[in-house]
Image (tube, rainbow, N blue to C red; front, side, top):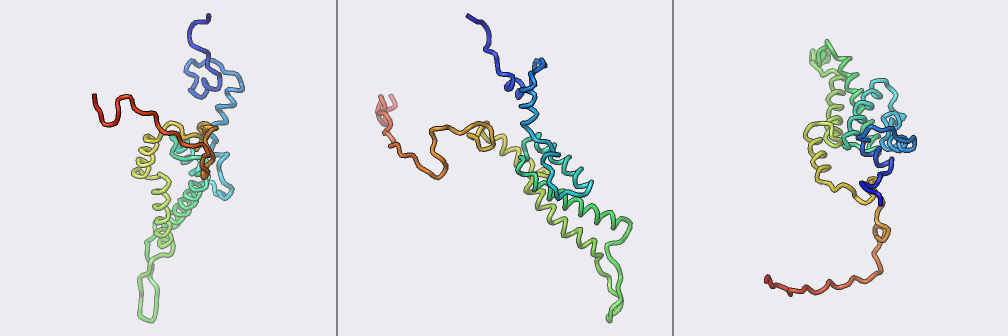
Amino acid sequence: MPRGRHAQPDELKALKGNPGKRRLPSSARRAVRGSAPSAAQLMPGFLTERRERALFRRVIDEYLQRRIARPSDANAYARYCCWLHRWWTCKEALDGKTTWYESNSLHGKLARRHPLFKDMIDIERVLESLEDRLGLNVVSRQGIVRGLAAMPAALGGLFGDEAPPTDAPPLGETSNTPVSEPAPSPIGIGRLN
């Protein structure tokens, strides 16, 4: 009779982080590498500027590790990076300038807002909305983390954690098996003794 614990599969050891730091077979290393996609794999094609791509890598790498973002959220985070790059470009163009300028009209000289400053204000509204939705500010991130802490460990394959039970009917369908009555209680209803 063998003694001690049963040996765990190498894939499971790799997913747990391989605390013994023993060398794992190449199949287990591939399973771990393939479990979380990198920012380069998720980067959408519409991120053309170098700054957009750098922002995307920085944001998505951190948020994937913390389970705040899912691979399906890559386009939303990429849109945020596009808008942030646009805001940054407007700011760089306005550095050292005033946010208004003077123009001549029939009524005399008028002080008008600079068009780039107007763009910055409009873009800032979009950025604030995206930050609130994507967990890119402190309050929304805490709400997401709080929700993750309250979530059960596995949701039956909803996020690829584990396969759903095979005896359950697909969503939207009902089972044809009749529901049986619960067994009668040995102490009766309402009796405490």
